[in-house]
Image 1 (spheres, rainbow, N blue to C red):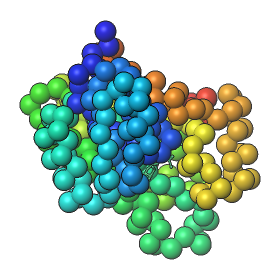
Image 2: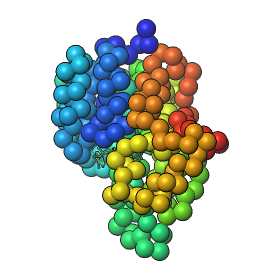
Image 3: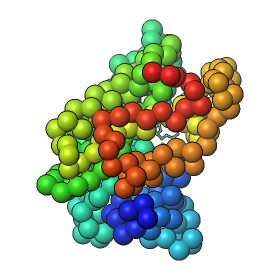
Image 4: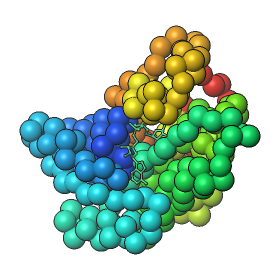
Length: 245
Ligand SMILES: NC(=O)c1ccc[n+]([C@@H]2O[C@H](COP(=O)([O-])OP(=O)(O)OC[C@H]3O[C@@H](n4cnc5c(N)ncnc54)[C@H](O)[C@@H]3O)[C@@H](O)[C@H]2O)c1
């Protein structure tokens, strides 16, 4: 009904909270899903196959061009050229600007922005001259600023630049959009990435709670479906009202 069954789908960041939920949602809708992550995404693949879905896993560094090309080649030979890519891989660091080494800026930009460029470019190469959907992951911080997170915020603004440019360059065949989550209850908001003080601050939004990865997956599935046929170049907020651009 929604046009997902039988589609060849790539989900990056599929070991992590949002990516795993997105991969499971597409598989439940009948897609063939390649689950990619820097970490081995076996747990996600097993959950999908145990539920009767079709999935395979691959380890890939989205910041590395050779790794991305290899992933796309494997995808094409195992499940056919990609129809929908949902690129969820990403990293975050909380640190005051004056304590931030340039190497940390480089890392965040490499994974979040260069990774989006490489995965999106490689997917569009396979989609070229036919229809396809590219769904990148920006953030509510793709619209606003945030003290002590400037490399991350810059990377997510950059993702919106890719979305808006590619939507124009490849319309009408390929639709390009971004998920813009607000605070979502995954490892990314965990103690390794963020102070407890900041976690608490994140709750200060109209919805007064963290969203779930499944709530992001619902929008990711919608954007890849026939129901989203007139949507391109957009950043779609799933954010409990954290920003209202
Ligand atoms: N959780 C939130 O509150 C929130 C809010 C807004 C945007 N986002 C974005 O959503 C996306 C998913 O985040 P999440 O909350 O699921 O976080 P997560 O930490 O649970 O998952 C991120 C995944 O990306 C993978 N990854 C990191 N570097 C990689 C690389 N170089 N190559 C391949 N994979 C790599 C990690 O291994 C991890 O599995 C990210 O782009 C994040 O910026 C998250």
